[in-house]
Picture 1 (cartoon, rainbow, N blue to C red):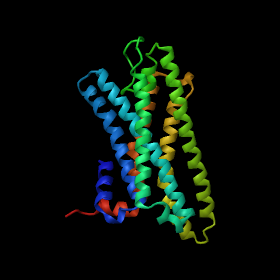
Picture 2: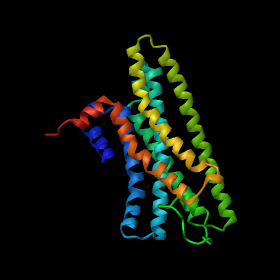
Picture 3: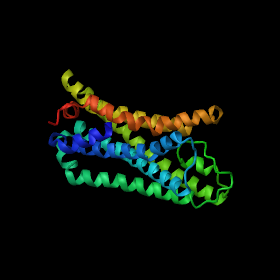
Picture 4: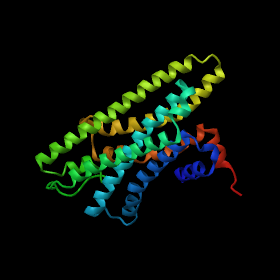
Length: 268
């Protein structure tokens, strides 16, 4: 509902037809997509007291979930660039972030997410599964599916793909960190307190969303094996697959006065 409200607000209010509004619309689409990929099937299984999913359905779920979270991460990186240009190079903002440039960057994020999901899903679901068919998870997650495989060559291919994805994700993370270092240095040079507050209010929602997304994913995949358990793995999966898409629209709407006003306006 919250993501739907942001989509309608950004679409209908011309005051929100800005680069950040455009990227926020795309971010809400990824959040809505990732939620709709995992939660409805989990609710269906819970209501009907079942724990099954078809092989084709599992492949589709794994593909779309990886597609949406990959695209979201790339969009968050692009949104960081938007904040960097707005604060560090405000005179070049219209030139560097025109409508065509924004459309190209958003298309690149979606295309990169699609390619990443396609490669991982095609490799994983081409492997023979010989370790049973119980994932121990409430949705089809690629690392859990990989554990059921007994193909050594397929396993090595997937490790290689994961390595490439991790390197790309790390490059994005370094870019985000570097950008925020430059942003905070520029903010500290602003003479007026009101100017510093306005600049920070532009960045804090994005920084909060990035921190929530990165920290939950890192905890999910980098936690020590010694503290791993089925119940903890389930909790962590909910933490990174459901919590960020649910909180992102609240974080942005609470800090964005124009968006808040549009959502609160009576359409009649």
